[in-house]
Structure formats: structure tokens, C-alpha cells
Amino acid sequence: MLKNYKIGFDVWALVLFLFVMIPNIIWLAIPAPNDILRVDSVTKTIDSIASVSQVLMIAILCIIKNSESKKLSVTPLIAGTVICCLLYYVSWFAYYQGIAGTIVILALTVLPCSAFLLYAIDRRNRIAIIPIAFFTICHLIYAFANFII
Image 1 (cartoon, rainbow, N blue to C red):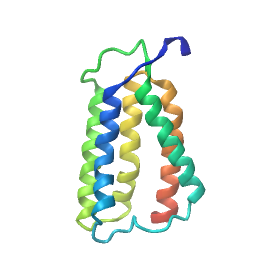
Image 2 (image 1 turned 90 degrees about the vertical axis):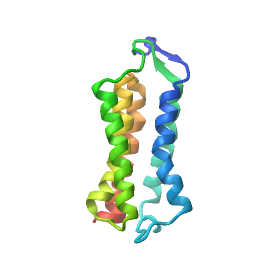
Image 3 (image 1 turned 120 degrees about the vertical axis):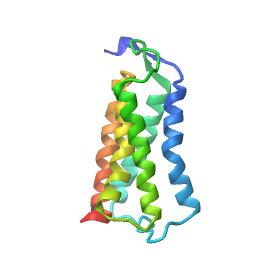
Image 4 (image 1 turned 90 degrees about the horizontal axis):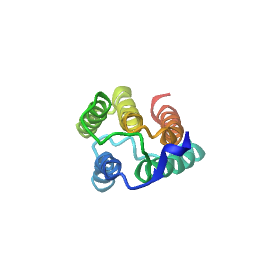
């Protein structure tokens, strides 16, 4: 399985990461009305695992490539990645409109994870799926424990 992987730089993985991070950077600088996300987390250990998983996820997506993956093109998986990103932006827009219900919180949680997962599957980067799965699980636990339950 590992024989098809090589070290290389995937600029589109970095672009995806930066695109997903833009609303987070804006949120850090400009608080939203009804900003429930600015609370002390009750899942500090899970948050730490999520942070490590996120760094690993991005590092693996950006620097490990599968030689069997084809040149990036519009495939159903890439279209799904783009749709997840666009819906993620819509979710941030709703959040900034003061809508901070369960659906918006789950969208802010699941959509970026889904975008990374779909991208990894399209790029045949199965190694990245492991930290993506850990990050997704931790992100969901954080969302449920802090905002939904």
C-alpha cells in the first residue's frame, strides 16, 4: 500500500486548508453577534487531540502524494469538496446573522471535515483519512459537548 506514496507538495491541499480557515480567521478578529463559540471548552483533552489530528491531516494532505492519483480535475468528489466549502461559508454567514442553532453548529463542524475527506479520497491519499477521522470525531464531540447537549 505505501509503495504508491511519495513525498511531494500538493498546493491544492494547502489552498483547500486556507480556504476553510478564512472564516475562522475572520471570526478570531471580528466577533459574531450571539457568539456562542467564544466559551471555555469542556472538552480540553479532546480539543488537544483534535488540534494534533488537524496538523497531521493538513501535513499529510500537503506533503504525501499517491502516485496513482490523476491530475486534479473536476470529479464528483472534488465537486463535493467545493460544495462542502460553499455550504461551510453559508453556515458562517448564518452564524454571523445570529443563527447559532444545532444545524448551524453541526454544519460548521461537519462540512470542513467532509471537504477534507472527499479531497483525500479523490487524491487517493488514504493515509490522510486516519487523522481526518480522528479530527472529525473530536470535532463532533467538541460540538455536541459544548453546544448541543
